[in-house]
Amino acid sequence: MFTGIIQDVGSIASIQQESQQSHMVFATALDMSGWHIGDSVACNGCCLTITSFPGSQSFAATLSLETLQLTTFADACEQGAVNLEPALRMGDALGGHMVTGHVDGVGLVQAIRKIGEHREFTFTLSDALARYVVVKGSVTINGVSLTVNRVGRNDFTVNLIPHTLSHTNLGALKTGARVNIETDMYGRYVERLMQFPTEK
Image (cartoon, rainbow, N blue to C red; front, side, top):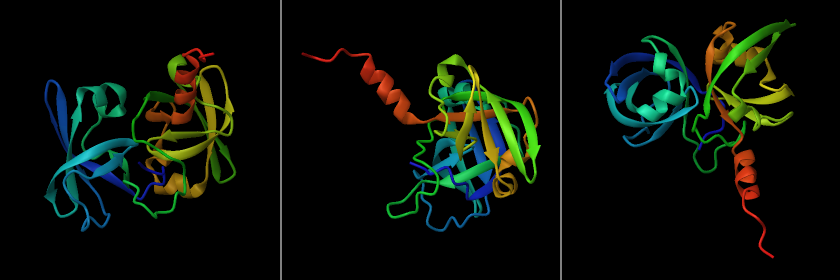
């Protein structure tokens, strides 16, 4: 479980592609002294399991075909910037919202509007995901916890403050860029419960 509060913008040090999976090494400036093989790290919002430590400031993970099909890692390149957040520990501050690290799919940057020092981003997404995005609800973009300001049929708008723009890879996004999206999990639970009739 994560909070959507990014702790470091690392990079992809290497990619080894195979037919049904990919092995990636991520470089980070975070203190890794307490990390262990098997720990979870959110990479651009995608929960990945550490498989090894190739260097003192790097960790490796294997991405399954399912992960590659649902995230922007399918077309990732070496040296690409990656938002990183280690898994939440009991007692840690929950500064964002409860994020599972299970990316639902990919969205696109439709528009970017400058508002003073802030930036208003509009993202488009599929019908399958759009129904879980609500005004003033939470959404995770590339692992960043954000509040939804407005929603349309297949788009939604969020506001990024200067700190978010400078401390995550969202500040470098351009119109048409692909991003990982995780919607709020509670909407999916409600939808599933509504599919079963109430017993009388």
